[in-house]
Length: 390
Image (cartoon, rainbow, N blue to C red; front, side, top):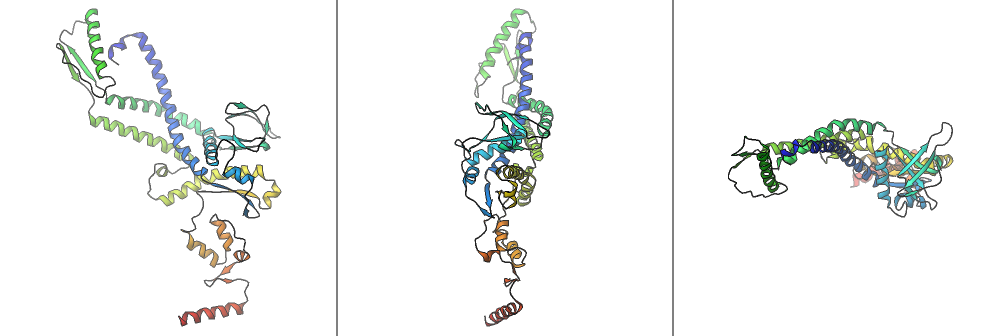
C-alpha cells in the first residue's frame, strides 16, 4: 500500500471499516487461542481416564462400561467423546448428553432449557449436527452438566478487548518490519501540480509492485528518482517479535489461572513438576471429574443401588502410582490401618477375590490381629531364632 491512496475519501472509508473488523477479529482470535490451548489440555487429560462401573466393590464389565470406555455412539470413540464433552462443558459453561433410542450417548450441539421451580426442567429444540429432535427431554432422561463458571466469557471479553487492540497493533508492526519502506525524492519535485502528481504517483506504484510480496526484488536505478531506505533494523524487529510472543504467553496464563491450571505446566516447564501436577489434579482435574461422576451416578443408578455400592468411579491422572508409593502402602498394611484390598483400591486397582486380602495385619512380622497372644509370641521367638541361626 502506498501513501497516495490515503488522499481518496472513498478508500479511506473502506479502510476505517476494515480497521474495525480487524480489531474485532484480533480480539476473537486471542480469546480463542488462549481458550483452545487451556481447554484442550484439560480435555485430553479427562479423555484418558477410565470410567469404572462398580458393583459390590468390583468392576462390572457391562454394556454401560462399554459405552463409557469404548464406543459411546456409532460415530465416535470414547476418547473423542469425552474430549469433546469437556471442551464444550468449559467453553459453553454447560453440556447436554442425550441417550438415543438405541442407547447411544450423543452430545447436543444446541438446545433450549425450560426451567421450572418445583418440577423437572425440560429441554427442547435439541439439535445434533443437522438433526433436531421433535420431542422434548426431561431432566431425568438426559445427562446435563453445568460448569458453574458463568463469568468466564464475560471476564475474557472485557480482558481481551484491550488485548485485542494492542495485539493488532503489534502484529501490524511486526509484519511491516519485513517490508521495504522508503522515501522517494524526485528531481522535479516541489511543484505539485496535477500532472506532476499523477506522473509521480504512477512511478511510485510501479516501483512498489516490485517490492510487494517478493522475498527478492530488483529495481532499476532510474535517473531523476532517489530512494531512501527507511526500513526498520533487525534489532527492533526482534524486540517486537519477542514482545508479541510474551503477550500471547501472558494471555494463556490468565485463562489457565481461571481454570485452575498451573501456568508452568501449560507451557511445558518441568521445574517442580511433582508439586505442579498435584496442584493441577487437586484444583482442576478432580473438580471436573466430580461433576461428571455425580451426574453419571445420579442418572444411571437409583438411590438404593448407589447405597448398596453401585456407582461409577473415574480413574485417570489422579491415580496414585503404586511403585512410587510402595513404602507408604507397606506402612498402611503393617500398621493394621488398611487391609491389602483396601490399599489396592487406594492405588486404583481392583480388589482381589481372596478372603486373606481383606484381613488386617500388624507389626513388621505381618501377624493377623485375630491371632491369640501365644501364637504371636511363638512366631516372634521363631523369627528371633531364625535370625540368630542365619
